[in-house]
Length: 412
Image: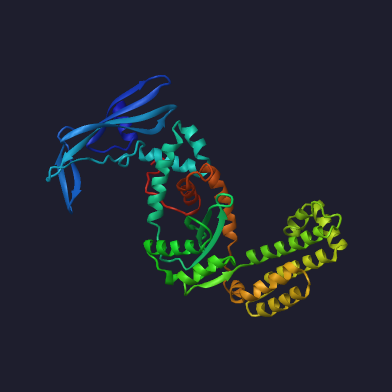
C-alpha cells in the first residue's frame, strides 16, 4: 500500500475523496495532508425535498486541525467544492470529516470533549496546542446540540437547588432528574428560584415533556421555590427531604452557640467545627471537644440530643409511624426553650405534608449537593463566572449524561 493510500485509509476517506499529497514541513515539524476529490465528481445536496447530484461550480481552500500523527501536529487542507443550485445560489458542500464552519475535524473535537471531562479547558488547550477560546466554541457546540435533543418525556420527579454564582448578586439554579440524577437544566436567575421553575416548565415542553407529568419535586423550604412549584407544577407533590431538615438542625445548634457567646460564656472559641456535622465524621479531637461542651453547657447538650433524636426519626420511622414520631419531636423541640429549635418545630409543622412526603417517596436533594461540588469545579474550569455559557457547557458535559454524535477515538 502506498503512503497516500495508507493515510486515506487512516482518515477513513471514501470516494470521491482521497489524500493527494503529504508534506512534513516547518519548525517544529508539522504534517500537512492535502485532500482532493476525483475529477468529474458530483456532490449530493438536499434542496426543497429533493436530493440533487450537482457538478462542481468552483472551489475554496479550507484548513482543519486534526489529531496528531505520531508526534507531529497534523492539519488537513482541501479545496472544498461549491455547487450551483437551480435558483442560481452557490453553496459550499459539507465535507465528511468536519462540521460546517469548524476549524477542527470531528475526531479532533471528539478528543477535545474527552479532555474537557478530565481537566480544565486551559490545560486541555495547552495539551492540544490550541487557544482555549476555540476549544470552548467547539465543545460548546456539541454539548448544546446533544443537550437540545435529550428526551425528558419520562421524567417524573425532579430536584432543584440553588447556589450563589457571584457574592451577593446572581444565583445559579440547577434542576436534576431525581431518579437518574442527570442534570436537566442549569440557569442563572436574578434573585431566587420561582423563575427557575418557570424556565424549566418551558424547557420541559421543548424536550418532549409536559409540566403535568411531574409527580414530585424535591426542594428546600424557600418561599420562592414553593411558589414556583405551585404555579408551574400544580399536580406535583412537594418533598422537603431529610438533608435540608437536618441542615436546619445544624443551624439551630449554631444559634445556641452564638447565644452563649453573646452572653459572654467562656470556652466556646473554635467550637463551631466541633458542633457541626455528624459524630462519625469528626476527628478524635473535635469529638472529645463536642462531648465536653455538651457536659459544660446544658443548652448545647439539649440541642445535640434534639438533633440526634431527629436523626433517629429519619433513620427508623416508617411512612406509617413517621407522623407520630415527628409530632413527638416537634413537641419536645417547642418545649426546649432553645429559640432555633422552637422555630424549626414551627417550620416543620408549617410544611407538614412536604416533610412527611419524604418518608413515602424517599426523594432527596443530596445528589444536588454533590452536584453543587461539581458545579464549583465547573466554575473553576469555566474561569469563574465570567462566561455563564462556559459554566453551563461544562456542567452539562459532566452531569447531564449526554450522547454525542461524534466518531469514536477507538481503533475500528
